[in-house]
Length: 262
Image (cartoon, rainbow, N blue to C red):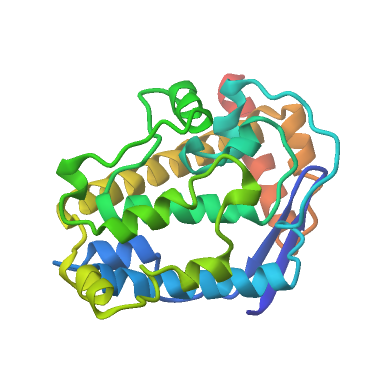
């Protein structure tokens, strides 16, 4: 993957990298008319193999953290972590993170992939966080009537509060749902299918929220550029080949506003 540009400020570093074509996995799956558990497992195995590689390299963003943790109010999670439905209890409780946090996310995404609903999603972000901390999730028959018992067991062994008790990526690949030990187990997952109707609805809602958040972020950024707030001044410290053109555009907007008000 080629690195084309880097934008750096006091609070973040943005990398502009080579475009990887193919789109998102959820979009690819949503375009299908039907999907068996066996096919879904094929996608999941690739993700797990990628995690094994990163965990083996002790990826800097996945390494256990021993730094001091500060209390975070529930209302702050939406801006800091995006949608809270994917984060593990250790994030909410400000506990040290480890590669096991990735395995929690695997459990959540597998649940969504098989059913089209989120395991901990509440009516509000605060309710979602409480559901995560309390491990408050179920397997409703309406959404999981065609799901194998092995698939549910796979999820249950990942959505575990104690990080040390979650399956590792290597252990996931050896789970009977991923690697059947008998013909009966293999036949069970072949007969099971994904709730595509529900999954398509979930993916459509997910894409709408992504578009909404992007428009809101762009609108907020435009306001910051025009009003010249302290945050805007911080963004101006970004070092890039495009910095001059962006500054000129912002200056032009300000001149137009001044001329129109006079």
